[in-house]
Every structure is written in structure tokens, then in C-alpha cells.
Length: 393
Ligand SMILES: [Zn+2]
Image 1 (tube, helix red, strand yellow):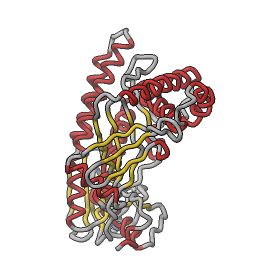
Image 2 (image 1 turned 180 degrees about the horizontal axis):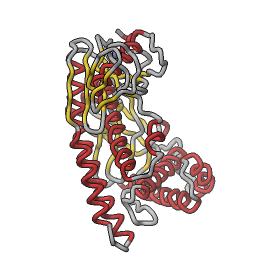
Image 3 (image 1 turned 180 degrees about the vertical axis):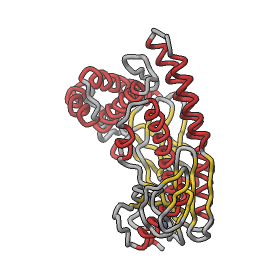
Image 4 (image 1 turned 135 degrees about the vertical axis):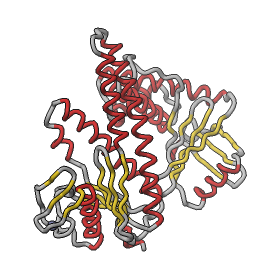
């Protein structure tokens, strides 16, 4: 679901200043509690802190206390992620810009087509609530109009001392009824796609990804060799990891867009192999070769995720099918053979096929079977969230 965040800035406001000071204190308490007790679940933190905070801030609206605790929990979650990725050396997060989530009960938002009025009662039944008014520019106006007529849902606004952010969630387009499929076989060095409606085969060289991965892994190993300082080691490693990720993600992103455009053009469904659970199979070996394969595997997983995300965004139906034996099954007779000679699949029936092409054709076929409802392996699934794109016409 595409989300757009509307951001409004305002000048110093004494009441908001006072409210945010209280919220900053609550956030700090939530962060301290979560770190000292090793808790992460937002609910646990609220349960532990709410009674004492209720006493400490008797006049504050309970929704604001909870909203501040929750935004404190959010800070902890963000900090833990940074720690896990090795992006921070600090032992606790800094709260630079205190913030509070405004639940439906703690805020009233009115839009009359010209003015956006935000009312925040600081205490329950506040006789003088905080009132903010904004005159949004035309781009925001259109979005607010859409929200007003129910085409978008409003998420929880976030208030800071000088800004208010309002997320609006727009529904994804409903995927069209597919008129054919595009089977996609994704490998370490190559991506092969087969379109059933035109019989077209596209082969795309993706060896760039493997090259970047290997290159930066080698540089990472070279750069950290002989270094004693673990901090310096970590820094070099994370630098190479970041470059690697940026380069490969960018590549996959463009490739995904090209495939989406192709599918949209012929109103086809995209079919991918379902790689869930494959990691365990590859990950068993710990050798250098296996490590590189795992790296490539992650990269292909990443590509699948990017493609899935884009398919959802553009309303392209996407199907995952059983990955087993896709490159070993003869596309002509359907026999599963082991006779692989290089990149050619030689079948006893006499058919000789490039194994990537065979895989793409087999993946497409499984997609068609799934669409027709026969799916003999029973492992096909829609990646698109709607119940069935077929039903929507
Ligand atoms: Zn055959």
C-alpha cells in the first residue's frame, strides 16, 4: 500500500513546547526501561511504565502518555536495528527530536477543502485544547480530498515540537486478470524469461551482481586482514557491505521495472520460483564456495522481494511456484532427467534445450497450471494480497 506522508511545520508554540517536554521525559523513561530490562515489546513497556507515569503526569491525556511511550519504544526498535547492522557503537540511543504518536482519541483532524484544523486536547475534556491550522499547498490538498472521500486511510500522526506528520495510505491497484504469464528463471549470472502469449524468450546477463558481490567480499577480506582493532575491522566490513548492497539493489531495481513494464504491456502475470526454505539447503556448507553461493542466493531473494513489491504497486499479478526440478525437467516431454551436459539439458526424448530456457518454460507452465486451477504440485501461491485477481476481472 503506497503511503504518502504529509508534513506540516509550525512556529514555536508554548503549549506544544510544554507537552513535548513531558513527552521527551516519558520517551526517555521508556528507552531506559526497555534497555535496562531487555524488553522490546511495546505492550510490555506500556504495561510496566503506565501506572507510575499516570501518577507523575496526572493531567496528561492517557492517550498522549501511551503515545509517548510508544514513540520511545520506536526509538529502541530503531536503535536495536542499528546495533544489529553494526551502524552504531553507542550503548544507548539519543533522543534528539522528541515525538509523540497521536491516536484517534487524542487528536481531531478536520479538512474543509481550504483549511486543515488539528485539535489536540492535552488533558481529557480540555477546555482549551491545542489548535493548529494549516493552509496546505495544492498537492497536499488533492491528497486530503482523496482522504475525505474515503479513498485513503489515515495512519497515526506524529507530533514533534515544530512539526506534524500525517501518513495517508492509498490502496494498491487491483491486479488485472492475466492474459498469459511470463516465467522467470533467476540465477547467479543470468535471468531468463519466457512469455507464453508471444513465445518470446529474453535472456538478461546478471553476472554484474555476482561480480560486485565477489569483488566487495574480496576487498572486505583483504581490508580486514591483519587488522587487530575490532572496531576498525567492523567499519571496513560494513562499508563494503553497504557499497555491495547499494550497487546490487540498484541493478535489481531497474531490471524489475523492465519486467513490470513488459508484463503490463501484454497483461501477463509474472511467475517466479518460490525460494522460501531454500536457504537451509544451500546454507549447510560453510566453505568459501558455499558462502559465495549464499551471497548470490540472498541477492536473488532480494530481487524477488523488489519485484514483488513493484508488482503490488503497479497492480501486476505475481505467482510463486514450486522451484523443484525446474531446470531438470524437459520442456518437451516433461520427463525429469539428470543428464545435464554443461548448460544443455539433453532428454532421452531427443530434445536438447538450454537449461535456463527449460527452467523459464517450466516455471511459466507451472504458473499457467496454477492459474487454471490444476497445479499438480499444490505449491503455487499468489504474491498479490487480493483474494484472487481473477475474481476482480
Ligand atoms: Zn524430453
